[in-house]
Length: 296
Image 1 (cartoon, rainbow, N blue to C red):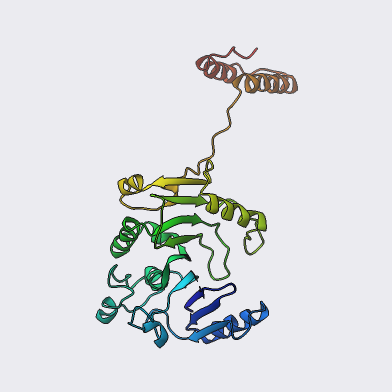
Image 2 (cartoon, rainbow, N blue to C red):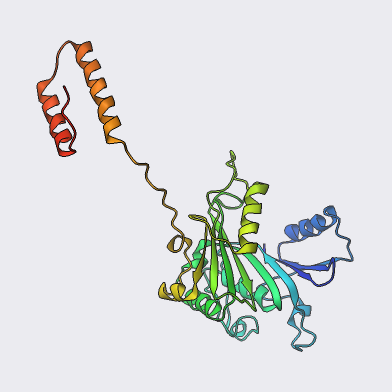
């Protein structure tokens, strides 16, 4: 149920993970082996991420505390948990506050972020609610933004996962972010529609990665937003506030429509053998308002 995957230094590095659900835990281990990762190159612990069951992660000595180059997470969305006073003093949450009981999304985020190296990168999949919900989540989000830790917000299409059909986002976080802006990527319209699930094709993934790497901007797809604008929006990260998703309406050629309409009216008259003066009169009134000639 709860999953944190971390990769630490070296050419290949070593992968560390923590998972509470025993079935998912076994699947995670099997997944490593199926992808050619040797059992000496990964360590996955069967434990609860939120309560930090893994003793190794609770090391208090800064010199010995594990830190990772990359952190990726796909936690359960808006999971209900039991934040306690003791957790409020936990080193992972103390500087930011506890996520609300109704949604542990930011608790999972802060857990992974705590163990990130200063030069590391973290990516976590979360529901869109974390981008705009108020209360304590707003306070956590605001502090992360003011401290310069949220680097990129990526909106994904709906119905990508077996467990839920809702659209989700990816938050990319860094501890030493240089640009004084946040990159927004609206990838919600780029996918292949399936019968039961939508899919991201390689070309869709490559577009996201390229945009992220070069922090490039594209109309209706990506935009770099200055922190001042985000502050003016009360640190709300709702993607639609910064990237317009509205499609431009197609211009209507009134002359062409009028010509076609006149031809249709003539066909109707010829087929019926008569002309409805009252209807034509009303129609001509509308044409007059548009500055067009009346129907014959």
